[in-house]
Length: 369
Ligand code: SF4
Ligand code: SF4
Image 1: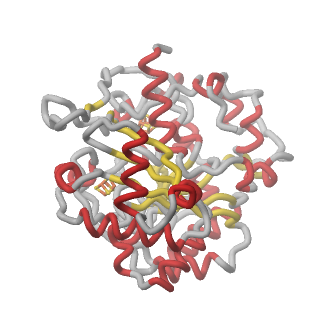
Image 2: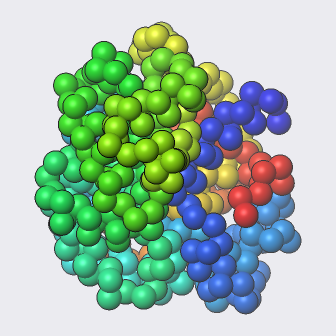
């Protein structure tokens, strides 16, 4: 594995796993005693077989991902130039409440644990049923931890009481920040909502009882001390620097971006210091690590093997629909078994040029425990 591949992998992992808490999610406790049957596809993966992770990936004799993502809405208030949202052709919709409950129950039947409500492309604060969903989840003990990432702009849709409820219900909240001044922000998001973004972050930081992760997706490289100064002086000037450090953690700062399999300097040059990761098309690649973390359920019930790059629900990575099958059936069916065996069934076309790709051997180098 080249150094470039490792660095690329580390950044991608940071984005995908950003919300995954740790073994404290309870997944480990659920699955530590799982029995491993021969049918389990984990045992066919030579780089995974026999190492500690396998106990996290089963419930009884059923395979499962580490956690689940549910995309309750696939619309966004931004139009970021580093995002495939603008090329999404899926119908924009909000997930039906009955489908949401069924998805949650299917996940609980597989052991439950950590649940993310971060859309693949979209922002959760556009979900008009968000509060209703969170109230429903209060009655589901199998969902032991909740996480979400938002761009914070539409915090304005909620009054202080509602916002306080929301940020209290999520144990892990990440905010993606798309610029530290209005020029950078507007170039990045193609929206004139810089002041609303700052105010949204301010209100979330003030309301949250826990530390918020700030994920900076910038066009200009900046030293971390400048970024902290921006948070302290521009976002929450009413708080002392010590309190700001308790409330907010600068978790990542990025100016290099994954290409979604379709972007590059030729068709979509990025301004300032921002760059696309180069990705060389390869007919055959090593099995990708990313889908081990989660699969994602889209707002129409379709389940995607990959929670990361599959912005338009490519049929090649689709496991089926939860209106017709259970999550356990889909995650233990023939399609997912093929997708977990690239050496025998080939690398999906969609994955051959994806710069999110991380070889599964990465687990040996950087355990996520
Ligand atoms: S990067 Fe996030 S905020 Fe920006 S358009 Fe995509 S989904 Fe929306
Ligand atoms: S290579 Fe495939 S599985 Fe891996 S992140 Fe890209 S689309 Fe997902």
